[in-house]
Each structure stands twice: as structure tokens, then as C-alpha cells.
Image (cartoon, rainbow, N blue to C red; front, side, top):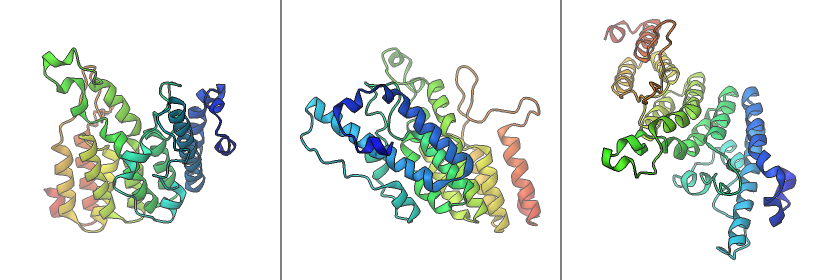
Length: 291
């Protein structure tokens, strides 16, 4: 990848290796996530984004849309921004980092980082205990979570408008969401291990707003544990009430965001109630547990 950064010829875009790059990127990210190696993960992310930026620039020049030969300057290297705890701008993720599909007409898969890649970065940061990196990385996955919101599904339209609509189906959006849903769990588990209860609640609240769905029960129960350890029983009750009141999103095929364990009939509601009560009891918050 670093060698390709030095090669900016138009022929590079047409090489046979191009179709293999996304697979290479994903394999590298999976390797880093498995070992909790956040530094190489962010270095790979730097290279991937830089390469995608150069290819985008040459694609524009090839089509005659731009005469500016300078590289896009709207983004800062991830390793510098996240490892040095540089604040993430509010507009950066959706304007500069989410254009992973710049070459969708050239290959089937995007060259830049995708939602699944950001998820793997969060997993790597979580396993390495880098909670500040988790805080800085969550905004970058935001546009990919937001685009899976049920309100963008074809089924949200009137029956008369569905046939002519180009919107994706709810089933397709749910599959896309399920591929990145683990990102929140990884971040909250890291916040729990580092006793960052405020960031855990903030992450869950933001995720609910972005996705319009129930967060994974593993993320919710992790937040309940850290709140109970801080003797914030009422906040546990508020969190449980909030997530339970969010309607479950089910598709026409019967799939849902948080499927029930059919072997034990362990539903989302039962899991959240059970784990939150256990967390409150372990901290001696018996009155809140009874509620």
C-alpha cells in the first residue's frame, strides 16, 4: 500500500490488483483487531485513506472535473488525530472520510475505509484498552450507521410510492446494520474496563439517534455494570427504560436487530432486565433492582 502511495499514474487505477485491494485492506484490519494492535491499524488506515484520496483525485482529473493537482487537504492522518487525542471535527466524518465509494464504477467494492473497517478499528482499540481512541473513532462510523436508519427504507414510504422508489429495502438496511453493530459493543466494553461511564452513556445515546434501533444488549448490559459500580442506580433504570421502549426493527423475513436465542428463549428484554438486576444487586443497590 505504501508503494502505491508513491505511484499516482492513471494506469494504476486500471491495474488488475485494484479488485484485490479492498480484500487486502479488510484482512489487515481483521489481523489488527484480533490482536488489539491499534497503532498498526491506524497506520494502515492512514495509507488506505491516502491511497483512496489520490485515486479520487486522478479520477476527477481523468473526467476533467478538476484541474487542481494537489491532494485533498480536508483530512488529517488518523494516527495523528486519534493517538494524540486530537478532537474530531463535527463535519469531518461525513464530508471527508465517508466517500469510500469513489470508485464504485470501477470496482464492486470501495477502496477507502468502510463501516466495517471502522468497526475493526474500534475492536482493535477496545482490545488494547485505548478508550480515547474509541471516543475519537465513533464519529467516523456515524455516517455508515445513519444510512441504515429504518426511515430510509422503502417500507417507510406510502404504498403508492414504493414501486417507483429507489430506496433500499428494510431487510437490506438491517443486514448492513448488523455488519457494523458490534462497533458500539466494542467501544462500551472498553469504556467499562476504563471506568468511563459518562462516555458509555454518550456512545449509546448517540448510537440510538444515528441508527433509530435498539443497541446490542451486550453494549447495554456493559453500561449497566459500569453505572452500578459507580452507584448510579437511577441512571441504570433510565437506560433500561430507554432501550426497552425503542421498537424492535423486524423485516418481512422475520429478522431483527437483536435476535432471540431460540435454544434458551433469551429475549432482548429478558437479557437486559436480568443483567441490569444482577449488576445492581452486586453493588448493593437493592431498591433500584426491585424497580
